[in-house]
Amino acid sequence: MLDKTLYMGSLYEKFHKRIFDFLYKYSNNQEIAADLMQETFFSYFRSYGDSNLPPEKAIMVLYTIARNNSINYSKKFSTVKENASNNVDIYQSKKTSFEKKEELKDMEMRLRQCLALLPEDQRVALIMKNIKDMTLAEIAEVMELSISTVSRLVVKATARLITLAEEHGIAP
Image (cartoon, rainbow, N blue to C red; front, top):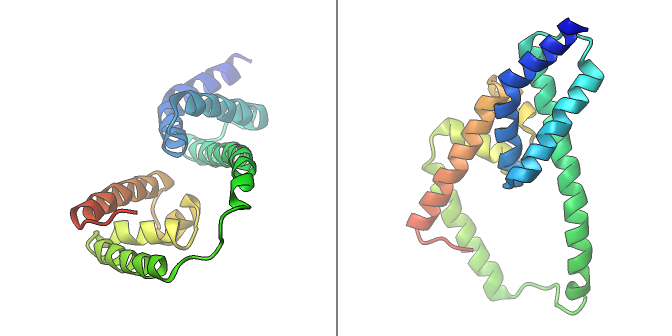
């Protein structure tokens, strides 16, 4: 029993900051990220506490659990938001005007030009994440990088793209 407690404590000490940062990136809320982190470690210890996985496998499982927890949380949150906004949409036209379509096409073209200015690894990671809707794990496998490296690439690329868009006068 002492070995199990020691293993869980050392795993928590070693990885809790990384898991918290990962969850904070998706929730943008410290309290939610802390709650999801606790739920992640609780789920891990409940399911894998007896397995004594090596740290490199344990962190992969923790990231998977954290990702699933954040997805489940956002689905629950977005359903409430979606239901509240459905009443307003009934009275609004679903058609986009010609001017708005042209404006969006121009914005997309200029945004693609900004995207081309990013370093290749950042551009590829960002495209796979946001345009191809791939998970960080899938991107990591394709790019032969760790999930945390891919996560950092996506965050850096997003920040850089926002900066470039602002410099080029692109605003939604």
